Length: 187
Image (cartoon, rainbow, N blue to C red):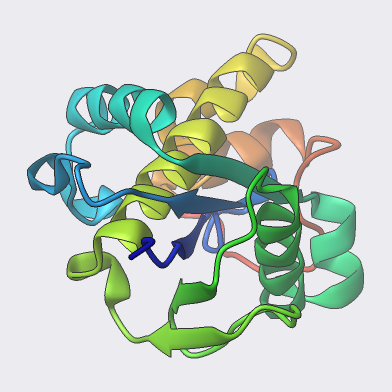
């Protein structure tokens, strides 16, 4: 009997003020060491990176999909997230039989999909997708911080920390800031 291929999908980067939203799509096999997986938000950066290396080496297939700040501003963050998820699923080298998505909404694909609230807490394929999405987005933000070091993107990854909001007040928005996102400047 052949194994049914299940793809997990999750995103990273809905909440930041800057940069892309990134979706991961991962197909695992039965022998994958699921004990290394957790919700990426509940892992330290070194643990996430270590798990991401194992996922990239041992997954049946994995991919990412990206939606850029211009798309986020044009469509809104919800639609841009679904677009990133769609791109991630479409980029898989192997087509799964089922897509399991973290959250309430799934991207429209020809593949049957199911949604799971807090699925990144208990579904291994979604946990793996969460880890891939978060590590890839963080790496992109770290690399971009070399282009515009004054924003310190390598430290806060674009999230609306007090430090980040003060840097925006001082330097203005960068080309990768999301113009449709509102925020206040700390006093």
